[in-house]
Length: 88
Image 1: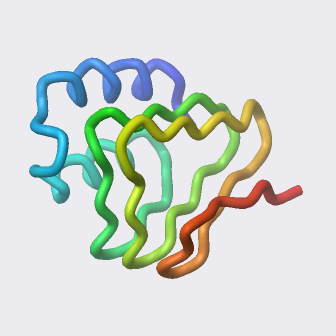
Image 2: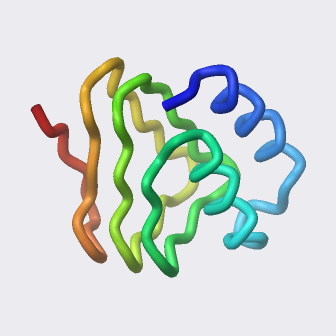
């Protein structure tokens, strides 16, 4: 993930309503380098701190105050998963 873009992503997220604008949030996260599936919903308070690869599967909800921290590890979720897993 591009850390400079991820910083800009977090700034924009503070301006967006918590549970609206999901297509824009998906677009911004893809812009940062994440692979984001269809119908992914991300709450504006979610935070992503990683430099490795982020893959979010289809129909996944990332709720309020979620922190995804992976360092340089690859992090992914499967379709509709309620949890994320680190991939080595």
